[in-house]
Length: 463
Image (cartoon, rainbow, N blue to C red):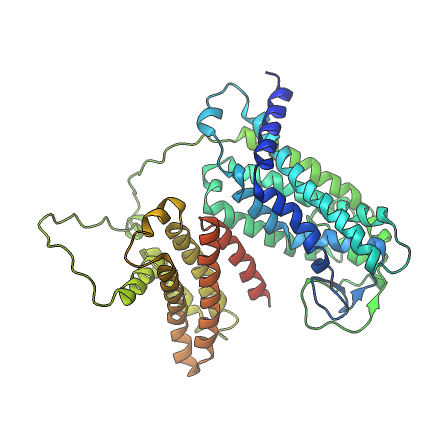
């Protein structure tokens, strides 16, 4: 088979699998339903794109830019969750990896399928933007000026996300939880790094740093090149709206070229993913040589005592269930070491600024990991036969997760002689536990819970 035929076959196979998944139709439905909430109203309700504390005048071009900015910044994690958790997550590698077809062509076809699905979602959002613009646009209504800025800002970011997905799937470490964490780091970097080039003149190099494509349309288009902008939510909105010369921002030197450069780089990354692809292998347990690794490695379970008596029914089954969930969430010496660091960080300054985010970040990984293990589809069929129903076990999980949050806040509360750290830890721990077990029960894994909680943690930390 030629390289083009292999890529075409991989593309067709992935698109066929996508079309058989209900998640695709849910993704296409999210765009038109959520379009109204992507644009803030005069009272600030909705996702805000503000300049100098003011919402912009919603012309056709400004509407397209605002929709594109929300997609390329705040909604990328939702698209990543879909790409990693949909029906194409499990690939028939036992068959594909023994075929003579080049891996680069297979990965490129898979990348093209992911990009096509994300762009289909963007097309649905465009239609929703046309309907929304007909209702809220100030001045002339032009569907072209809604679509062009939307695609110019958001399409390169979505195509780059598809390339990142196949690159993470190419290596064993990226296929696991570390890949989710790496995406979270890169996503935060894509929001933070563009701020460093706000004051620089517009050029290809300057705009290339702005992966989300939001700096130049806002800075160049705002009155007096105002670099005080906000994306997301804010409680400090000022009355009145300011005009935004969107066309001037899109025509800034190097901006359009930088967006095209990101598309070309994404295609190159997808091809590179095929070159560095590592076949799946059954992981064999290797001897750990370093002293630290041996200490962190959990001890092997005690050998079974064949002469032991049968266990008696517990006098306090609910309490023992909570205690068991508490031990499983905090399993391992590494968690104990990190818990000491998180609890100690609450003594350094105000618990709200350091201790609470540190403890919550640790619990996010611990809660999502244990929730994913306990809600695995294969295990769920077994746990339903236990004496206590799954609902009781999930309630015990929430109590155990909240108890860990309270325990980590206890040193700060004792040092400050205040209940505020305990109350804050109880609220955040309860919320994180509910989200972790709820999403794990719906999805059958801890992936969605981990990523959603990391996004929420970023918003909590930045606030």
